[in-house]
Image (cartoon, rainbow, N blue to C red; front, side):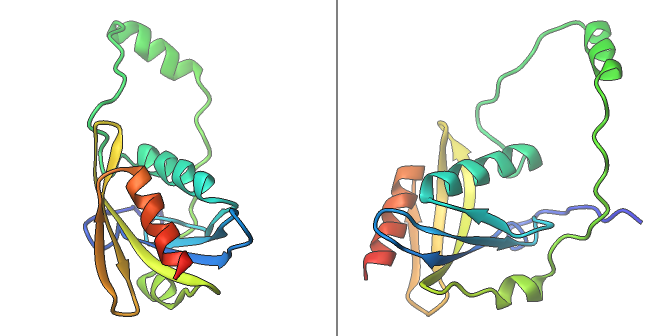
Amino acid sequence: MKQQLRLNYNSSKMRVCVDNTDGSAVSGRVFSQRLKDILFFQDLNSLVLRLDKLMDEQNYPQAFQRKRSFKSLQAQSRVSKSAAAPEEDDRPYMDEETVAAAVGEKATFILQVQSRQNTNWQGFVEFPDGAGNREFESELGFLELVKDLLSN
């Protein structure tokens, strides 16, 4: 039986576990109920790119601006029939307990991207240690928050 992904406010949160902070390289793992496997990142740039790709694939949160095609319906159906269908992945998504139990060696925080307007992320970072939430209005703002967190 195929498990369907149902994203909502709580299930779309991503738990970022930072394991290594050697110089400018920050590496770690991401856990979320929207993932089937742990998402590994080698630096903050790869974290942003991989999460942006994930949000595009799942269309959540939906990008404010998206390239659109105005091909005829017949041309679109010919293209879709000729393209090989990807294999379906029957593995289950992560459960809430697995996500909640994940802890990074250097730091752990919850990332919630609420919207993607003007080609930027808007959302907040929640610190599990009770330090509260901090909002950001762009990927750059998010990266600055993470760097501040790791420098403390």
